[in-house]
Length: 533
Ligand SMILES: [Zn+2]
Image 1 (cartoon, rainbow, N blue to C red):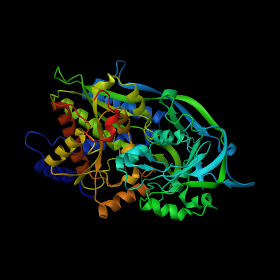
Image 2 (cartoon, rainbow, N blue to C red):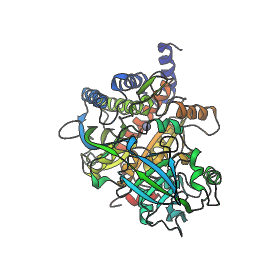
Image 3 (tube, protein in one colour):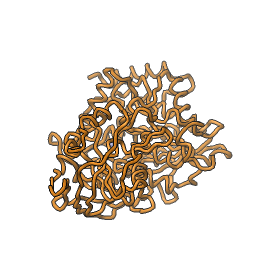
């Protein structure tokens, strides 16, 4: 291992040659790593939503923000309390059974399928199954899996994924749990069985299934429940999905190949019904978002806010892997919190004269379904229309050198253009989402801002397909993503982290100081959510 001193000297040299004279470099990677080490320490117990470990992490973050000199984001302080409901399955009193005429075939919980408890399901359901392809109805792309299909009173079986004819952002949007339910409910369905696409599973089935009885949280607010009325929600193992297709003239292999090739799907009734019995314990709990503000200085613009966000929660203590049960979440997402904290410190201490105000937001409940950001965007501390952009950092993965910046939402708004400009000025290439099947665009907190009409992006360290870098990332996802080994005993590239921080800082400064407010692109699908534009 290279000595720390040498690493810093080399780092300073690289950054110095890239930054323009009057700006930066502002970061050395060290302060970033120090924050990651605190938040991902075993003492924080994996920062599960509603846990004492997360409370400790948030208390530490609040103290850091205070000492950095930024102001509390709410009248009452730095914390926004988020009311939640915790659900825990009693698996010994729960079951799934496939019914074929009079024949009953038990579904093995864990091996074949598990209940998706984020959705508040009925305790007993029985209904026929219908294969609804990808379960998509996307008028903008002229694609409809549900055409001519009778789903009334039935359970839709869908495959995650989308045909390549649908743009990535659009396909991701229509696969969000709320939008998917809206589509299928309108067609008359009462529940959904989701078969995970074997060609885009980040986490092996066994690891997901091992934590299926772990409690989950949901917002304790019926007005914010976009899957209300969904009576059944089950996730199915693609390795055991063949049994669903018996007697239909179709095989799961055929479906799977279409999903791999991103071709249109057939849809047809299955020969089976599904019977569920579900027992759940529920409990009211609270957690919090941490919010700080750096007021702008231009009287005409300081009433507008740029949000820099990162989720601070992770998965807590779960099924042990290699004897370790603490899911530390170092890259997911202590690393992102460290970026937002460092940028807050830097902008405050540089007395940067920013025209617009900046909100620094650390969300709870991201891992439970973007709960903290959903609550925050529904109950913001400033008038909703005064939030003009969100730049979100979640699991940006500085485990390879930063040569390419990946920008989710690159082409959707002028926030994407700003990111492109900043990267250009630092000699870093930019790429849009090259892996649309993974639905990353809707898998983090920026998505709730988008749904409120606010132009947003999320950025990460990028890489090209079929390169050694892609292999490193793929191995990371398979072995460390949502596993206890996402801890501080893994190799990281502090130079990449420092350069990434410089980018986020520059984007924030640009967005805060541009005379024009951020705007959606004229052709962006997501423009429809913007109010008054
Ligand atoms: Zn995560």
